[in-house]
Length: 303
Image 1 (cartoon, rainbow, N blue to C red):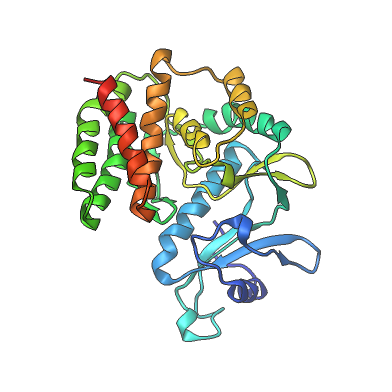
Image 2: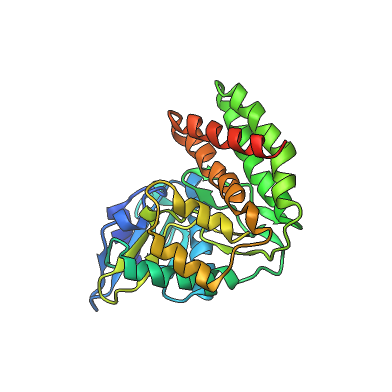
């Protein structure tokens, strides 16, 4: 990963200055003298891990599927050489290529389904399940690291969210129900899976997809990647607006459902639960009810 970019770029990033949680699609482009477009953002020193997590996610996705996600240009921290003020030293910055995007069309959704199945979800880890650095789903730091099994990895991810809810207070019954899911459901649904750890986008909902206006090709962005079960990405794609049916049809034409296939929907509920719990941590409100409904169904199905 490049340590530095030209000071002119840093200056423009500082002028834009969105937070780490701002989507790449919401940042105004920086135009170079050659006419090339870039996206830059800068954060506080406490957000350095978030910037690194996004940068490492983009690097992995561009190895697996070149051009499907914006290309990372640089991610580092401002040092004394580039800082105009002492207060700027140690602040992380991020620079990637700019893609002019519209919404995901049915035709680009089909291409996305195929590319996800044949490129992203065939890119395997040699280290196990997890990721080499922490990644963030929204502002939630995921319990990354390396695990020898998917069951262990996913249990740690859910456990991290439940711990966050317990610390927030007011979610005691949801926490207890979640612990039952960890005890009964996760081992029953994930313990016997025979799968490889493949690269995941990690936050693949409709708002993190688009169509490149120049090429008509799909684009995915704002990743929170790790290596896990491919179906975890599909679960997120079904909620919060959902990606069109054309995406799922094309995906499964190229990558069948995991065995046992008759547990596909239950696994989907289990993977969706992660995001409902995360939204409860981040926003509270009705997301807690949605999480409870998912857990009710799972606990009824797995006695």
